[in-house]
Amino acid sequence: MAAMNGRHIKLVHLLQERGEARIADLVGELGTSEATVRRDLTALEKAGLVSRTFGGARFLDPPSLVVRTFQQKRESMRAAKMRIGARAARLVEPGMSVALTAGTTTWCVAAALRSRAPLTVVTNAMPVIEELGAVEGVRLYCVGGRFNPTNLDFLGTDPAAAFRTFHVDIAFLGADSLIPGRGVFSESPRNAEVPRAMCESSRRSVVVADHTKYNARGTALTVTPDRIGCVIMDAGLDPEAREQLETEPYELILVP
Image (tube, rainbow, N blue to C red; front, side):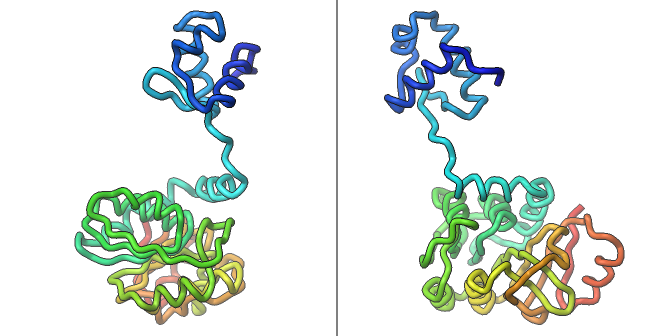
């Protein structure tokens, strides 16, 4: 929005103090018309400062650094990740059991799974919980541990052990790096244990990653190529990279 004027600032302060207010009350407080208040609220909503409600508006707390970090990662290659998520969801039939690791691409898989219910879903990722927790027909199991603010997930031996008590049809794994001949890598060892346990507890492991993860930097080995059933990636790979991945023991699905 353009620079906020004095009325905008006062309106934001009023909502910040009260949390929520009716338009009729705001008209009286500001001494202006209802049409003006509605226009102001529309502008402030577009700026992400308030949210319109029936007959009023409420103040929106600014997102925390944790949430902003995830949002920034989500926006990187977002269109490709959404296409990957949609393609991955086609592997799932109603009635199946599915495990999802943390990550922005697996979050896109979760979003696409909303239409595949009934499902049983096991995850350690908060964004997946938020995406599927209220979907009718989805039975959701959440495993806890130490909270990791970078990926909004729970890590450690506890969630890894919990995943090993399940047996699912498909595990969808994100990747910080996919290296031909070596497998999937995470940025740090603490991020590797949970997806490794998830892979061990599934009939089929499917890696979902955009093409920028090909040969990217990774520190901790998560899954070796022989444990991967399928890799779903966007078609942004150069011909040489594609040729290398096609020689791997897993199925490669490239999404246009």
